[in-house]
Image (tube, rainbow, N blue to C red):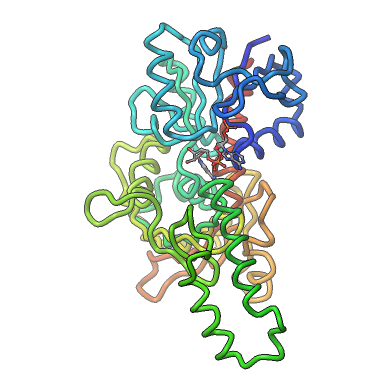
Length: 366
Ligand code: NAP
């Protein structure tokens, strides 16, 4: 059996990955070695096949013994350890959730229900680096499926509503702390107070020095943040720039299609949502579009464009923790028959992060 090093397994993505690997009995098929950047020598999860002790995630010598390394640790880790390992002559497969290697020619972006052809091509070319794509991009492609795969889209915008957990454990906890802080301000009862007094109390609370905002740097509770990640060229955020680059790389399109967005962090806990305006390459009847979306792959649920169904099903609260991607609000727009509106959401920790990594790991094991 192959030796697989697991790094970053206790973070947001890593925890969901372990949960899925346990559900699918993946550990039966590999020798797992657990690593840590912060606690080497500590206790490893029960699936550790060595001594149950966490190994040092910066120790190139032990990492070099692995047939594969799967990391959900983050970009700084990849940036430091990956080049050292390759320089030391390590030839194993590197599977990664971070964005560091996504733009490299040596890497394959993995999202097999959408790009199994690209994955097979990468394997036949002897590629060794398999990277999960940006979570929002993966969820958009999973949510529209064959519309992208059959190259029917001329361009699209994706206006996103991204959950706090997309930024990791510390950020998700911070959102909850912010909610707690704010609710503590009206401890004597919301119903007993005038709503304008409460509004004023909350606005003052944002300015208090104890207001928890170490990680987001701003209030997210009772607020939204229309900028995610750093600033890049053309007025885009890095998160927005990824939409164009990664969509086209995943699909292997030579004639790249424009995908441009405004990415917004909202106070949802899990699940990234996005509102899409799509310019189709031709006028396709709406029932054909719906059939195409519905039949794209087994992990898609098409929600009828009706108020009741939408409010019940097309929400982060409903979709959180589910592997299914939900797509709805599908309708032609007033701009013309080639303009399509859609809203899609999925748990970004599953198909947006852990699941494509778990599936490429399984594929590489056999
Ligand atoms: P995360 O929750 O911040 O975890 C990353 C690492 O932080 C952990 O492996 C752990 O490393 C350390 N850590 C520090 N404090 C922790 C705490 N209180 N609880 C648990 N771990 C803690 O990051 P993530 O969201 O999983 O993201 C990992 C990578 O995946 C990033 O590159 C990210 O961009 C990418 N990604 C994330 C998502 C998402 O939705 N979150 C989606 C797609 C891709 P040690 O155990 O070594 O200390």
